[in-house]
Length: 419
Image: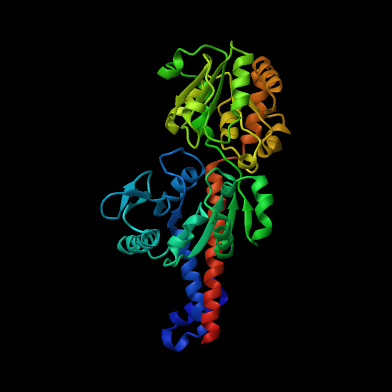
C-alpha cells in the first residue's frame, strides 16, 4: 500500500472520521490502491474482432479463453446482415467467454447499422452488470462502434498487417492511426510486425506465436486409429493445416505434387478468399477441409513432414505463423518458404528448412524425410521449453494491469490537483 494510503488507514484505525482525515491526495492514493487490488482480482475484457470464434482456433482463442478463466470475456464478432429486426446473439463458449454477434436488419443504412451496434453493445454490458472492463481490439474497423464505452484501458493486439490482406477496407489505415492514438498498450504477433509498429506507440510489446505443447505433443505418441479421411492416404505424407487463402503459393504446391507423384500432400483447413475451383488438383493432393482444434494432433501424427507453403507477397510480409511451433511440438520436421518470421528464428536455428522454388522445396522435404528424429526433437524441445500460451497471457495481463494503474493514477492525480 502506498504511503498516503497507509497513513490514512492508520488514522481511520484511531477513530478519526473519514471526512476529517481524508485529504484530496490521500483519497486519490487510497482509491488507486483499492482499484489496483480489484483489477488484480478479476479482469473483464470486451474484444472487438474481425475473426469468427469458430473459424480457426488461433491466437485470439488461445489468449481470451485463458482470460475467461479469470473474468468475463465478451468476444464481439463482425455483424451478420439478415432480414428481420436487428438484435445481438450471445452464445457461451469456453469458460468465461461469451461470443456476441450483431445481426443487422438489411434495410438499415450503414449509419443506422453502426448506431445500433454502438447502442446495443453498451446496453448489453449495462444489463450484464459489467462496469469495469478492458477494451481489446483485433481490428481497427471496430473503433467507431465503441465510442460510447468507457474502458479501464485499451489494448490493441496487432496480430496481422490487415491492410495488406485481400479485400481490406479502404478506411482501415486511418482507423488504425486512431487506434494507436487511443491504445494504452499494443501487442504485436511477430518480430516483423513489431519492427513495423514499434515507432508508432510508446508502449509496444512483442508477443510472437506460442504453443500448447501438451495438446500438440499428443501427435508424438501416434494414433491407434487414424482419422477416416486420412487413413487411406499413402506415405510419405507432407502436411499443412491452417487457412487456405490468398497467402498460399499454389504454383509451389502444384509443382511439388507434379515433381514427386509418389509423395502425398495433405492440406487441412477452411478455404477462404479464393475460389475452391481454382486450387491445384492432382491425384496426390488432398484437401481435407476444416477440422476442430482438438482433432489436429490426430492428423499431424500421421504426417512425415509438416510444411508452410506460403507465397512471398504483401499479405505474408508480416505474418508469424502460429503453426510453426505447433509443428515442432508435434515432433515433425518443418519445411517452409522464406517467411521472415520463420527464417528468424526457426531457420537460423536449424528448426526449419527454408526453400522457395519447387526444386529447393523437393530437396528440403527429401532431406527432412531422411534425417534422424532424435537430434531434431531434442533441439525442438529445447527451443519450446519457455514457450506457452499460459506464459504469454500472464505477461500480457501484467502489462494490462500496469496500463490500467497508469490511466487510473493519471485521472486520480488530476482529480486531486483540481481539488
